[in-house]
Length: 292
Length: 261
Image (cartoon, rainbow over all chains, first blue to last red; front, side, top):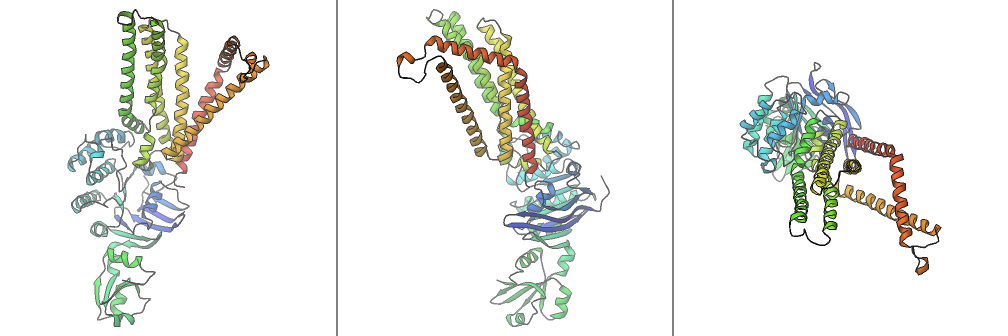
């Protein structure tokens, strides 16, 4: 495997569908980090991930994974990556023992001991058919399978959606453990921003097929802020300074992408830190500028 | 690829066990009829020989059909339904390997069905005290090969359309065209054969009706021609089967490659 700086590098990824275009998407996931890929439903997260995994063919753009070209070296790349989807992609008639035997013949690096170790840890029965598993069990099984062939990159599409907070927390702990090895990286798409706020090193926001923001989570959180003001003050704020504003009968809440400017220009106003949720909502409404 | 073949085997195991149980039950019934004809309550029955001959045919020809039925699997649609097909594209496997796994799974099933059919034929001959005709073993292979081509074509449609209803509708349409085309073609051939000899198959006049002897002559003529074609062009049959299988394979790979384009 080539030496590489970024586990994922996407440049100018474009895919056109009737009614939706993934438009010139570019971002990178540094090696050894976890990136949260955030956006509302239909924003283009799954399309980007599917293009990355080779499930769909992009119209244009370059994609590199683990230092290799995702198209030209597809087989070599896929040996070292693992994908986790929102739904279990295995047949309901199978059980974990059968899955182990199947995967053993697909991945040369498959480690049955690791797989059964995860099953034991997650309290998953090895002989029970997948059709009888709960949603949480199915997700844990997918993660166990994904982590049992020494994958260096984990790509997850809405993997924690629909899970209860206890299971989500358990899964997030596993990811943190996985990242203890600095060669491992994760790209995790989700619209549950609280999970990403907990574990992500960097985040990328996508909306309507376009990347709005991409960078280190702490930098993004530090640079954005929410300013609260009354309606009189709101009318005097320069509209070019903020991303969008939530206007209610009681006043306005505005998202600024430059906290320093906000603090300097509007000193005296109430300024709160923005969460990833806030950033997503305010950016999604940026075209309207004013919403309630 | 081996992993996918194992998956196919496990997923279709239940269906195959059911079909093979039906086969075992029918086999037992055929053996019981023979025992009954030898020692039981139909031993002295009139027309006993005709009955046992018919049951022999059921055992020698009908049961292989049941065995081949067990070789057909519809897992490919389940792969789509549970999104395993999508997941398989994230595995270190090329589209060729994914498709090849399906074709090889079918080949193993049809191969096993052919071997069991041979054994079944020997059992039938032993039970019904009939001499074995080795040509019959060849006929089983031919039937197996034709059904394998049909199964490969089924896979191609499944890869192309991903929708079982659409694929089945197309397959049934093609079968109907082949069936009715063949039937009408055969009738037209019969008609021209008899007309050349001054008879009309569809005439209401009794003097123009085709005599039984001419009908028997026609059937014998057809059988001779078929035998001649089989003996002279057996290699063409192999070429056609191999070509169709290869075309089905290439078309399936292409459909998988073009997915998501």
